[in-house]
Amino acid sequence: MRFKHWKIRGFNRSDAIELLDAGIANIPACILASRGITDKEQALNFTSDDLKRCHSPFAMRDMDKAVAAILSAVKDGEKIAVYGDYDVDGITATALMYEALCEMGADNAVIYIPSREDEGYGLNKQAIDWLAGQGVAFVITVDCGITGAAEIAYLYEKGMRAVVTDHHNLPALELVPVCEAVINPKRPDCEYPNKDLAGVGVAFKLAQALLASKAGMPVRSVLDRFADLVAMGTIADVMSVIGENRVLIRRGLQKLREEPRPGIAALIAACNLAPDMLNTAAIGFTLAPRINAAGRMGQPMVAARLMLAKNLSEGEEFAGALIQLNNQRREIEQVVFDEVVRGLEDKPPRGPVILSSKSWHQGVSGIVAAKTAEKYLFPTIILCDEENGVSKGSCRSFGNFKMFSGLAQCGDLLINYGGHDMAAGVTIKTENIPLLRERLSEIYHKEIQLPPEPTMIADFIVDKPDKMLTIKNITDIADIEPFGPGNIPPLLAIKEAEMLVCQAIGGGLHTRLVLGAGGTRFNAIFFGIAPDAIGVAVGEKCDIAFEPMINEFRGNRSVQLRLFDVRPSGLGEFENA
Image (cartoon, rainbow, N blue to C red; front, top):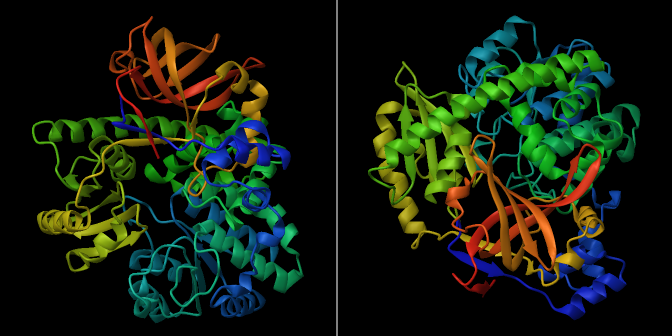
């Protein structure tokens, strides 16, 4: 049993019936009702993906200045560099901005994505020197730059100009970089309604403003051109999926299913995904990790070239390279995580985990930090020590602790940091790690009085699985996609299911199960849990929490339950959420 507390939201039958009468399908109506969306107007507003929900890019502070500066640079034939980041959000933003510049006639535009291991996140003087040496006169940052005031100042010293586009938190308003324009919806002085745009979303807004000003392209045309990139970056960066982001993601998913660009089509084929399988889960758990692998393994341009591939043959080359890099990443990640777990065996943490090693690969620090935080239920920082006395790594929060805010209170100990409340990157002198460990622990225990206990919240208990969990009903769940922050994937529960089959798969790392409920047998899979850790024997009754899914194999479709937890029936109560 992974979770100590099992909570159920539940719903009023009358609310679900009202949604059904409004045209919402069966299970989606129950899910929405369990989440407090109880009438037709609320439901239609929540699920709407009307383009009217997209805001004008010129509602963003400095957008007019950015457009004027970039149009001038393009008109004068200046060499423009798009400076991005090495994760999916940064790479999709880089490809989008590069294509937009080419569409505007900037034939000499170039791309620069720093090496995670050698340069780290964001702008750096080494890269700026190289760009200056290549004759670059104008730099547009995407998904980075908001914390790079000193580097932007150095860029201007080298005779270049810049526009910063970013979506990360700003430490303080007075630290906004001084340049032609700084576009970031999280600026305290920016009134743009959607504060949850991904980096690629901000880049899209700039591209929308540029192409509208340069070529008079309407919103729909620009979105049709780039929706796939915007959706992938937004999903991979775990941004909110409601409001404007819902429109961007749904349009992007449609484009990915119907007309994927050559490189993405090649990657989709390499991952054995059918068009109707392309949803937020497929991007988040299948495509994104492979794209991210390029940056993690120090070859981010492989992913960028995949996005920009001109034909399927070229796309297949880069897709194959990403698959190989991802396999390497998995092996390294497992080695590092095993070392972390062994190091904590004798002394389990009682607060934030901050660990470092010279032997760890920086490219997997974020994944290992996330897995460590989930295992030990505390915020985690995984650092890689370099020979020059500097350590770089990734931070992942847990529970309600705000990681970015915590780092900001330790700013005097850090060389650099940036990110969000739940995830961040950090650079620190190795000698300051013990001080950071002590300071962050004090901040954590002051903010979090009681460490969070593992708690699972399900939407409702399925009383009639044979009638509710049908292929049609589960297929209908796509109506309330996309899923993510603000609209989490549905989590349902069944009481007193019978364990019929429990087998190890994936080298013993995962479990395949067959469960009996409501007179029907259901296939289920439990990722990351071996059979001996489930705690229920074949023939015994159990409670299960799961996400309902459709499994496709050799053209056959069937219901599959992706398990989140299993416990012996009667071991615990279902609490009210």
